[in-house]
Length: 549
Image 1: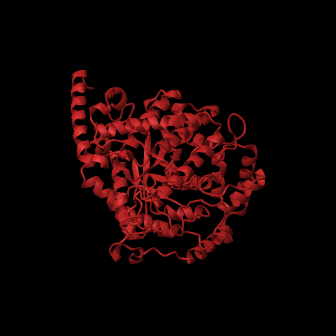
Image 2: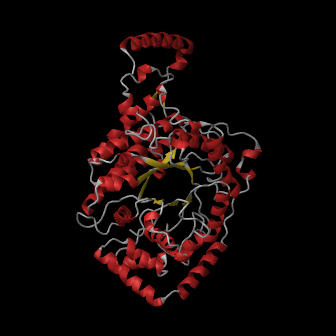
């Protein structure tokens, strides 16, 4: 982008500048600088740090490959990011009430946690002291009907956190009750393909069933949302977060080919769920670099449709960065994270509340998180300019540096067998998390209020905050509801649905339709887990990532 004469002149001027600064700093300037992920960082960037940058090939324009500057030609000028605060507490009534409140405050998307996270029902003794604490509890379709009561499923996009297949079937069933064609339904399931299944078509792999079902009949629904945000919260680095997500995205595309679905049928509805951490410049550059890499990877996988190379992503601000000490300071942290997400071109966003290291967010803290997004969107001015940090020598150099750091990780994962690769991802994340904590314990990484600046106003202490209180009565109410539903349902319909689902598990047909029949007969999640166990002779996976598959 610069002629040789200009580059030479800049090089001479920079050498003079650096000599002057070195004299001023003396020994204080000898320590190397690095990003939070350990990438080398310079105190000043110039054209010399991007000397071979090819603008059209590497940066381009928003809405055009390689999508470095964004996936929409007009950015936020015509399509604001969706403000999708995560909600999930108590039973369906409590969560529905919180959702309605937040929609009245300007929230624009639905994102609910806790649904189908466990493979047992509310009357199981394991729910004591737990039900509704880590998200909303769902037993049957009746709970989903209550949860979605008053929510316009045609206007508001839905995000299912976790990939419980019974819960997905419940969402589709409520849409059908309302006469909404599934082809018109917009939303996302936090699903991604995991290893397993029989034969080339990987029959019996429910994560693939979901992708296949949506690819063939739900063109507006994101069948895949690759959550590398959660593994970033284990402590992995920004290049690892990028590489893990890209590897898993490519794995989804490859896994569907044996079922007759090519890259251009699958890739356009793959989305990514990313984190935003505290190293502001690194995070902005991360989003830009990951878009560019996905465009390259989609082409390598045989995608011809430019839409297949658009990396669309949701951001939830870092939970790992939140502190129980001086929790009000988390407002500042989450604001930095959210601003990085906006400048990085996120399609939707959830800002963690300042009290989440201590309890379920209160109505006040949840509102402040929403207001954080609204102030950035409407008062800061950053949404008026597309990719406003693009062209910064620092940001462009960091974008390239992150890409260079991430590609070898992708390539190493692709050399492994699939189960080995998934296990390697977990191992690397755990190792980095341990190193991160060691650096905090040694005082090498400053965390305000934790290992530095610990003294302050009493108003910053956790004791000064009104925290959300868990209500044990939620469990009693939920058990009563479950008993009523089971007593009132059509016994014959439930028995037929049980047989059909058991057969589907045994012959390994696509599970989505049989699962919809099961939930429409008001079988509970615990009953569905037992059907699976009896049909396959193996217990259901516990946890939000795998159950129902």
